[in-house]
Length: 379
Image 1 (cartoon, helix red, strand yellow):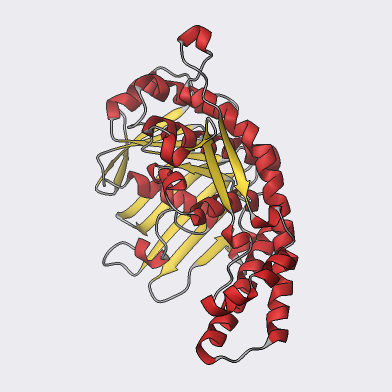
Image 2 (image 1 turned 180 degrees about the vertical axis):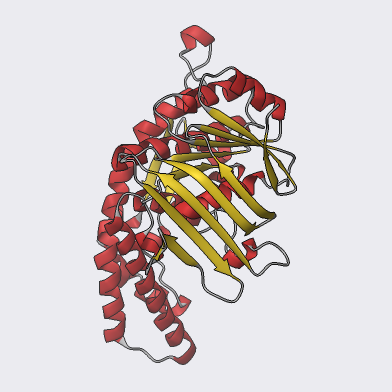
């Protein structure tokens, strides 16, 4: 599967663009803030019905305009062509369509366009709170498991209602135990399969991640390089791994009542990133952290490919600046091989992209981006 054509109208700083794309590698070069990342974000929209960067859809409407539109023609492995469209008007709700048929639920689209984004912001996976790591694991599993996504949506609805009841008690000292038990039941029914699938995911995912970390970090045995291989891993931390959720909720009841929110559950889970059995955040160098998150995302690609049977689209947004030339060349060769499908790359250094592409036989196109205007680089 690949994106054949992309059409943008009033999306961020791009007033208008119509691009015919390579089915393998597409490169966008230009200065910082030229609009390169916006192109990748528009493609991300077509896969996930939302921006990778902005929390509010209307923030992505070009200043002074009253709507944005993104249209993508996707060529699927069965030779079918489908047009995915996203339109956001300033005074209306977002609409999402496949071949002009609007989705009733955006969740029904998730997984149809498998995609992985690698961005400088991925360092937040290591340095920010546990909510981003939960979003990562949820995003990966949801792309191939609709039942997981439904459980997650149901859990979050029940959690919101339970927290609302706890806050009401805290403010009014009025308690409804039957209502609380109903929300407890909803939490438990959905938390158990979520916890089970997260554990299964980590068990399968970690060996794939370790393989890519070795490639990206260029680790070799000490007999060849004098360096000792770094041992990396990811642990899944959850209180449900140790005790039944019903027991946890009962033990936490008084704490919940006087804090006004639910203190235990899968919404508190975390991923623990380790290098040589030490937390990556505290003990890994910047280079190790960069290799860690790139390896996670490449493993995400591989994992989704295995589960879905289609090669996800891969977006590489300005990730070369903190990698040395050898690793950049190694990474481009890696994503250019047959195992990977369509790839989109942004970079500030045109000469670097030209050199990398001139030294590959892979089908590719290079585009120049300046002030939101996209043109083919024919030089």
